[in-house]
Amino acid sequence: MEIKFDEEVALSRLKQGDTQVFEAIYQHYWERLFNHAYSHLHDENDVKELIQDLFTELWQKRHSLDIHTSLNAYLQAALRFKILNLIKARFVREKHATSVKRNKFVSHTHIEEEIHYWELQAALNDALRLLPKQPRHVYELRQNQGLTYAEIADSLHISISTVEKHMIKAVKYIRKQLKGFNC
Image (cartoon, rainbow, N blue to C red):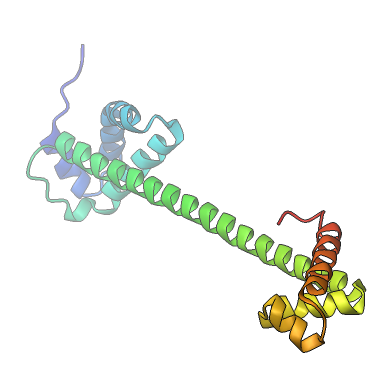
């Protein structure tokens, strides 16, 4: 036979700081609150922590409690509020973690690309330095100054076909030297 729990008497005695009545309230509502919270959160530790917080706050606010419905309704509403706050916090945490992972990936990728660029640039400079003088000069006039084959031929006093041969030689050599790079 279940003993009737008198909420009004319990609330009155709780406001006076009666620890025995507080324990009785805890015992009376704990399982019901646990089951309700567990049905939403599915994490026993989170649920126990929420309920512990709920009862800690109930005890701390006992002198100023102003409950207009029932103690049960008050506890259920307070628990719902705590559940929603926890779910929001989880969502924000997950969103932040996703953002951090994405930014780390973007940042990491950017750094890798920059390193790759500088390594490629150094290898290109090495390849150009090892080219014979004339093919290197023709390549640099074409790539660095944007001159046409005809303009290069005029400035170096060679034929256009010679300019083409020097460019072919330079490009083949550079490709061979940069073969290990993903360009």
